[in-house]
Image 1 (cartoon, rainbow, N blue to C red):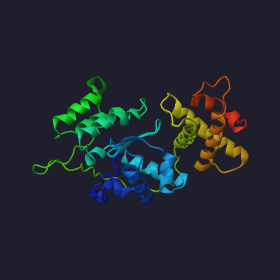
Image 2 (cartoon, rainbow, N blue to C red):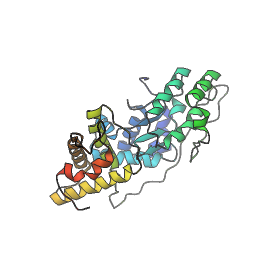
Image 3 (cartoon, helix red, strand yellow):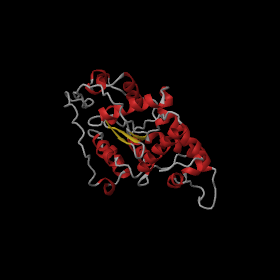
Image 4 (tube, rainbow, N blue to C red):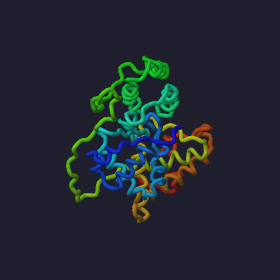
Length: 292
């Protein structure tokens, strides 16, 4: 993996980046440059690792992350919360492949992405576009790694902005994706932060400790089940008379998951502890009955 990422200085005058809070700018820089990134600009993002890398509290990180995603969705980023996958729309414009071997490596990197994620199909035309102006070996390598049958008919539901026109005979500079964002009015009501990522990260983190990998988060309904667990632990907190926070949720899911992956009864088929069964048995692992 290449040990550096390119970030254009134009970013500091970009309308999207300028509209972000200080915390959201830090999160955005992390998304562009962290060790979690891949040369494709498409990768599985561990929210918990990102938060720990930045030294931020769960709630503060959640708000900053959501701000960056919400403001950047149109032009800069797409986030698949169901599968924990992020796509940086202009990453390859700034970090194009330097040789065909980089393109060849993309196949294994895309294999890391859950098949259920729609961001794979969003990424294909972006990757193909990044090869414009490259010699034939780049295109041949790409076509071999991603056969036509796999790519045929794939297109972005929301087109990526066109790059800046070429200057002289040089390669086109990175896209100018500056857009004007309306001022964000203060909301007197505290916005509801999506906490399914807390459930996903806590569960998959404990799963990885047992099996050495985080497993796939791509089964239908996982997102709804994770939202159900958020409400479940919210009720547990209320029943105990304590404040419900993302940190409390994370600790609760982690502790319950530890008990679950140690449960090897006849209903659990080794070496797999499926998330669906964890949700169905949550009362057993939390040790408290909560009416749902």
